[in-house]
Image (cartoon, rainbow, N blue to C red):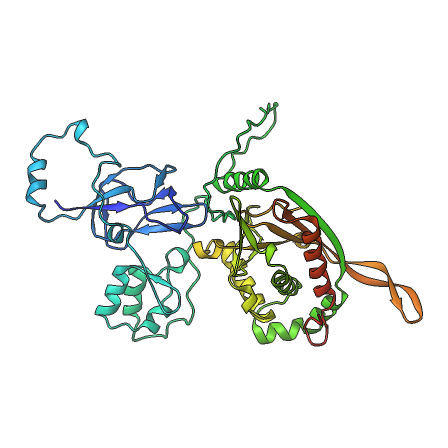
Length: 452
């Protein structure tokens, strides 16, 4: 018999292990090439792992919920056919417990084969080797391949999808955009907001014991909630948190949004909110103060060249995830709005990829969504600052005019900046927050640009 080892793949640059959240097969099952074998979860993203070969599941070496280092053999597929002479000789020797291979001793095939690599398309989609092979044999063009709706995780095209396309090739035209994923088994494991390269560790101090009384309800934390808890505790242990706050006048932003929202929706196909204006102002302030767009590595300060703006997204299960807009300083207001909406939709549908939630340099969280005025957010490591945007509310304010001071009704909002006091002093944090507020208050409701 010819065996094929399934290896735990590397799902990202900083990923060294993954949790098996669900097996879709059991030992003895017949599988075809590209059939989904299992689902794994890291602290960044969930993924389905397909079988790169056809055969029978001979061994499953790790159980559900076990954590497996990258590169370890997790299953063995019996492909049938003739085995090498050396393997045949070994098969004649009766098995004993000592001869059963362990995960550490099982020969591993090269990662390029065992981890079933995927290939990028011109549309930034990914295809397995089997799908690529079928496409070549059936003369399916790249543009046709990019239009095939995928039923796998994150819209990945599976073998059944491409075969269905071939059956319908002469019929109705395929949809221009990938279909929404079919819902997979509910595992409770979603991508987390954690973007730090260091592994998640438990706090060193022992938490106090808590006694439950009669009638109390005990709810086990989900895997994601545990990761968020560890990430928050590690952030407080790592950084010296300080928060500055400032109240600003956003009357011009509100007036502009009320004026353009209907036309923007008709023209761009997405709703415009206040947040993109605040994000664009944040990018401008980060350009002026690059020390805020930074990370700390031991006794070194790394000033980030790219501005990858993280957006905290609340999920339906009350958990949180922070995808980021890559190179936000290269986008205009419309571009930021569209990318923000794309990431928020992908987050709520569990379709974010590893790149979407890694590499962030500064995070913005919107407390105003929940009608909260002020907050003191926790820094998203390894960043050194995070901005909280509060609710917009009408308030009486004193305005200076040529005729003297007057009291008027204005739209007001609080900004809160939490920063790492190890490298950001109060003067720097305060100056950044003041500059950000000045940019927002200078917004021109007619042109949609900042006057500063």
